Amino acid sequence: MTILCVRFQLPARYEAEAALPGLLGLLEEFTPVVEALPPDGALADLRGAERYFGRSAVELASVIRVRALALYGVDCVIGAGPGPMLARVALRDARPGLTRTVPEGVDQVREFLAERPVAALPGVGTTTARTLCEYGLDTLGRVAAAPLSTLQRLVGAKAGRELREKASGIDRGRVVPNAVSRSLAAERPFDRDELDPDRHRRALLSAAGELGARLRALEKVCRTLTLTVRYADRSSTLRSRTLKEPTAHSAALTRTAYSLYEALGLQRARVRAIVLRAEALGPADQASYQLTFDPADEKVRRVEEVADRVRAKFGPGAVIPGALAA
Image 1 (tube, rainbow, N blue to C red):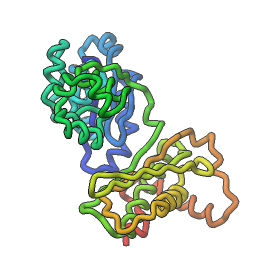
Image 2 (cartoon, rainbow, N blue to C red):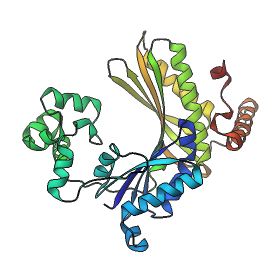
Image 3 (cartoon, rainbow, N blue to C red):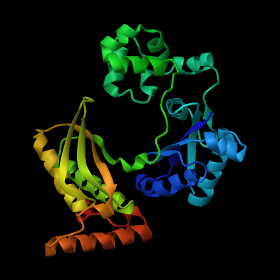
Image 4 (cartoon, rainbow, N blue to C red):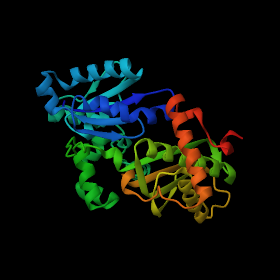
């Protein structure tokens, strides 16, 4: 068991996202091979750490849990496996205070996976799971036993081959360090299927503000913004737009998010959730977004800087847009 999948538990989502860089730093004290799984998780490859510390990955997981509690007041659940995919599957059964491990041995791994639903496999989305279930392939054991040609007809040649391998316990994945820099996402689910466009826009405003604050805290800028709208019938619409210039400013992100939403032309759509993702991230010092000759724009950015300092001192929820407060 050399790979850990860790999910940090905090009562408030915004606190979890703000604390993630520090929690990743805690893992990096044990290994430099750490892959962020925003907003609250990470993968850690402990092969070198096991040799260096003379302890197993499960023993190191206990130390990580204690340090997270002592330094951040954060408990965590941990899954351990020989590969990233198996560690993520094990995490589904993990509980605070107990690391869930995948049994050793090929036959034991297959038995561990056999009765699990296909949706438990990382990378299998709702649409793929529904398609497989319609043909009776509702567990990983049945997927592993299915003819390869059948799976390839259902989900495609490459995806079918990879699906069969993963369902059989073959984990070819690896932990990719610093994946946190590739994208950041903010999701706004609704308590009920929402028809009101004003509430949709408020969710976009909140998500864009969160992304801007997180980008600035990480000293990153994004070049692409992606909007995903999930509907009551479980379908979804995805739209992306490349920004005129890289930015981390909430106002610019909000304008782009509104533009993406309006371009969808939704008519009384029953929306279940809105997800905004900042992609193609880069260092803030390489961007020109900081330069402005518009006094009004400069004023907005100064207010933004003050709000960031307040959040850093009093917490992520200390400042919220006036439209949301209303």
